[in-house]
Length: 190
Ligand code: FES
Ligand code: FES
Image (cartoon, rainbow, N blue to C red):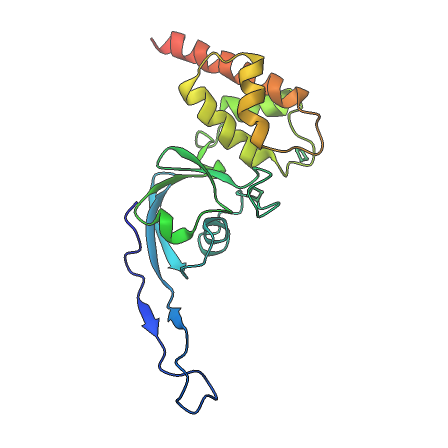
């Protein structure tokens, strides 16, 4: 990662009401974060404390990334940062400066559903849909490295993604179905 380019430290001189005697704590100004999101150059303003999830949702308008627990426990906020699955509620926006970020908005193939999305729809892999963006991103990362996963591999890989609705059976079936579709596509394209 490129670090914190554009983030300007600001140290205020005195604390308010301290009659100039007490040094105020150092403050950091908001700065510009530049990154690629789903292949497009994007930028927005972030404070050093701004979470990547909030930056994506509020600065870039990419509300497909959901925020559930905000403590790294539910997986609904997961995105790819330089190809690595990342809990965006535990990452800072400034840490993604200069990086390539993939969100759920980048999964569809233009106006067509990705095989994962289609399989989730057909296999009843979602009900309320809150967990679905994280499930899709995490499942996509699995299939990118493991095109023919076992059911156990799918379950283990998605063990960090909590679903309160489905009981997981439809989700696992959907990922296995998508894996089959993608392999067939690969064979046809070969
Ligand atoms: S919101 Fe990030 S893991 Fe739950
Ligand atoms: S579909 Fe509702 S939490 Fe998973």
